[in-house]
Length: 281
Image 1 (cartoon, rainbow, N blue to C red):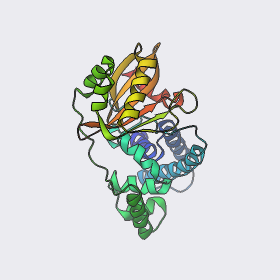
Image 2 (image 1 turned 30 degrees about the horizontal axis):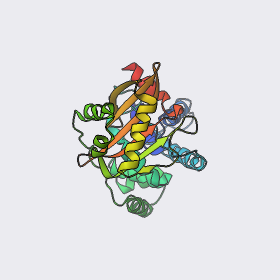
Image 3 (image 1 turned 180 degrees about the vertical axis):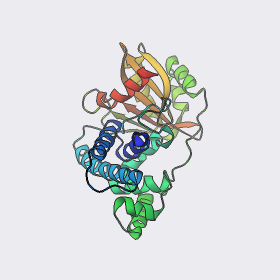
Image 4 (image 1 turned 90 degrees about the vertical axis):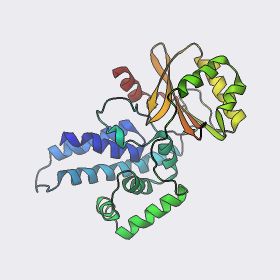
């Protein structure tokens, strides 16, 4: 039964956007299964999958209510893509840019979309898992696709191997014009400090605003810090350390040869698991 933990955690994380909460949900469900008495369960995998997904939906509803009072922008909790499989099936984890995009959906829309598009569930299977009708499953998926402008879950975008090297070279040069040349016209920078550390309250749109913020963040806070290259959720990322402590995860979305989105995850609560993963490498 414990062999199902990585798959179950992947389901929960993709729905929730919180790795720590996803692990807690899976642990609770597995413990309840072990302590269960009474009628035998014919299909343990199906039972556990259904239990985890529905609990993740309920937790997601609670999380969305909490987000209404969140200081500034809320970003999903990142996980290190290069870490060996443990509590997660890394291949089943959605890209970070897609996780951010899914924030537009409510909990049930998100679950249906993920089950259909990422895990190739049929509507009959989704209906059974979520205890809804097949027709309702189709309608929910249709609404979700409309909200996401019919953007499918595509293959992870291949980023040039030397992308982060070139970015670091430019940012080190302190040449803001060269930095602007790396950015797409519709670039957007989003920072999440959770009200616990300094971060931009609102997203910054456009080349000039984005470049100015990225440059300021580097020169003011990080130019003498230790910076490590890597990936989170299959997207390129930089990890900033101060006195050995991970203080920022900067994630890049690449499109058509340019940087289209930059996410600064600075909320210390969202760096705990990531910091442990990086230290275990």
